[in-house]
Image 1 (cartoon, rainbow, N blue to C red):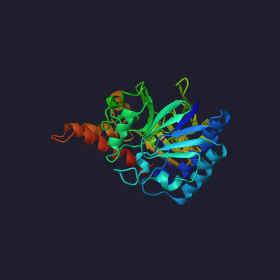
Image 2 (tube, rainbow, N blue to C red):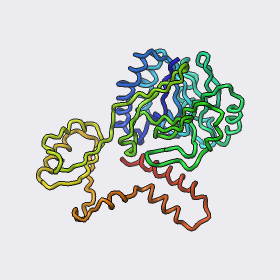
Image 3 (tube, one colour):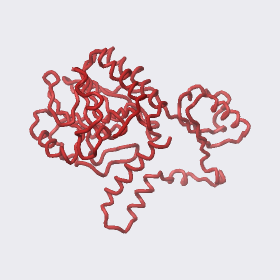
Image 4 (cartoon, helix red, strand yellow):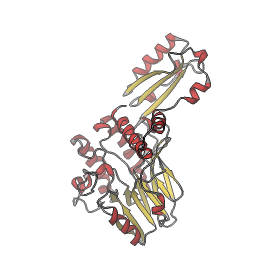
Length: 353
């Protein structure tokens, strides 16, 4: 049996931003549902964080969600199994009140929701469904892990040591040794795809923040007979960077049409021809991009004095914050503090493009 695996869809992301909403459906209507239909895939498991915000979502987002995401599953007669993720719950310490039950519960015969751990058979292949673990359900969840005969688990877990976003690794969460019973674990939660050969974080299907730039996105299929995990790449992007260097390229011929409906960062490396730069930026600003930000790196320095060391040793915000915490003369749990700072930093990224 071939099962489609999808996770961290975050409908309503970026404060119900319609630019992102439309971009998300480029993926569903151009990649995801056509692939399922062409390959006759009749089962899909969503590994949590269906919605983005824990307490509300706009009617405009819900209209598209119902008509452009839920309806195709009904029309194509695909069984959809959805785990509760941490973004789907109203209270942080319990899964009892969640967006899945409120939006979808007991309305559709082919949509199955999991707010508690449950073993489910796909043909003769048992899978343990493991939603977000919190203080209320932790004992029951680990009890189910002990009792299950399944050696494969679909989950929404926070496990220490895995990459959350590019270059940033989780320093809080469960120890992966607690899950050594299972041959294979597929999980949502962290947005960067990564694995250690046993635990697979599948990553988001599309870009949502600038740290996603350059990271391949998409969804997966899992074959219950061969246990093969296959990745299907999403070709659509919403973030683009242009490294402007007029010593290397003639920008009169640069195609700006490809930046339509994109967020663009124009990073100036060299602009010796100021008139040519103005002409290019004028064309770029008329290309119907959602936004163009012009960044003049090292603009306050003499170009002749900018050495490779300055560039190579430049540190990003999170690296500087972690170094600051390491240098603090306090008795606090520094790993937990760095983990909390990292979460706040990435939440802040969601508020600003």
